[in-house]
Image (cartoon, rainbow, N blue to C red; front, side, top):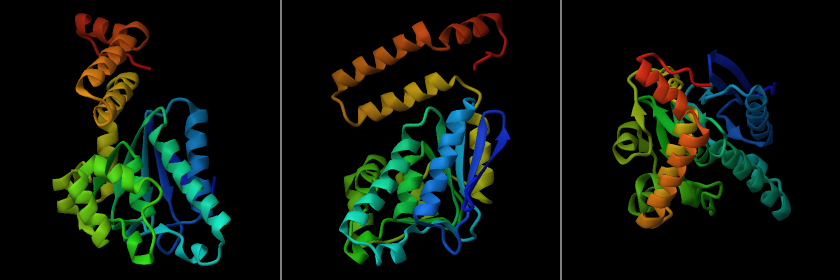
Length: 256
């Protein structure tokens, strides 16, 4: 395992990935490589249904890009660094499992972009989220300008990015930036959500995600056709046969 990213099995089908790069989980190369290794390990295991991304640093989920690193590199290295950040987020978003970000404390810049690449986000009361890149003359370049509007809408996304302000936990829940707000530790809330997510059919859940994402990119007619295609695929090649049989027999389904 990486020195700054570790992972463990929480329960059957649920793996917890923990970032710990003091003082603030800046997303430097070591942390990005550690996240890549965690994704590799989950893929190799083959039985992961939910990945929970968490932090062991009090007060921080992840503070964003490694600004000290940025101050020492040239344009080519900056291009490579940005590519590495985008690659991790894209791998997480496209993974064949669901993912939940457990956000306590600050999730800023690249840290929020990492959280937004997850399927769902659970926040604790201390969570503060933002994309403050304009303060240093940049934009959120690891998916922020694309994923934030899809979550909260254009106007709210522009308000958050152009002002560089931090969004508190309650507002984040209200506008859809996070999906659940818990009173205690965000990791406990994320694990409780993960335990709910491991029960249903994973192929069906992933088809739901694909279909909902398609709704933001397709016309209603095309989206309906895509939805029908996804459902037909589940009936022919997914776990629908087991789910239907279990329902008729009044037993719990035995999904993979």
